[in-house]
Image 1 (tube, helix red, strand yellow):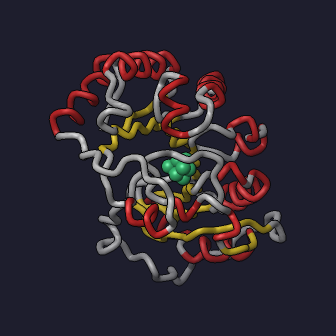
Image 2 (cartoon, rainbow, N blue to C red):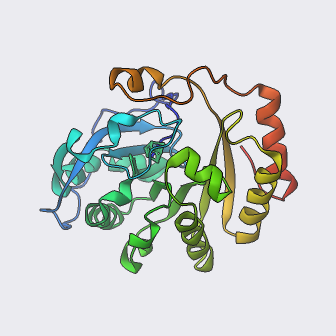
Image 3 (cartoon, rainbow, N blue to C red):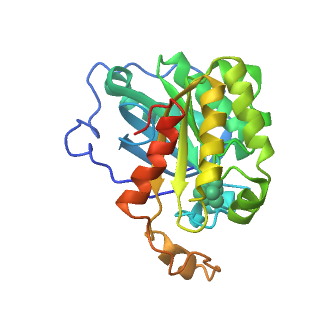
Length: 272
Ligand code: SF4
């Protein structure tokens, strides 16, 4: 679930695309399980620590006003792919990503396909790979204990911190995401919190302070990423004849982004 487009800064430097000569085959998993995949990225540098194999899964129950990837909303717009096929491809990069990063399941909303995600995580852990889940947390109740055990890190988008603004922004309820965050905190599962800053939508200082206090109180938030909104996804809405509600909204200034980061820092959180 990537709310903003990503620039692959490491692709040029990393030996991606090459299979290490000694790369072992992936371990067996629930190989026959199939799911809908939008795309893959073999050298992701911004979806978790290090260099990552990123799987963007299709399907999402939210409709975020700032979504840069509305082409991931409907699962059948993706490609039906088996776990075995994906694990074989991930295995080609195992030697490199095991040492330098891991695998991130993103989307869309990966938890819209929980059985598929579970099988993929199991297969990745069987290969000894670090795993991350990039999610809104809205479907966090679908993460069972086995899936949780195979997860090393959750990249959690908390898109707003009042029910009213969250619903206006996403069309969904906020509480399931907060419940998921509390559950992760209760077992000490690390979170990287992501917050997209949109002028007039998510820049209310009191609300950001409240979110920062909530996040700091969890005790398992490793870092907060404040992501300035930009308009790079607008054309996808237009191409699909969708009503883009953020037309004309300017990106936040550097000062506004820094002020937002300072609110999270003031709560004692590490901020990128
Ligand atoms: S949660 Fe869904 S709608 Fe929101 S930004 Fe992510 S993919 Fe787009």
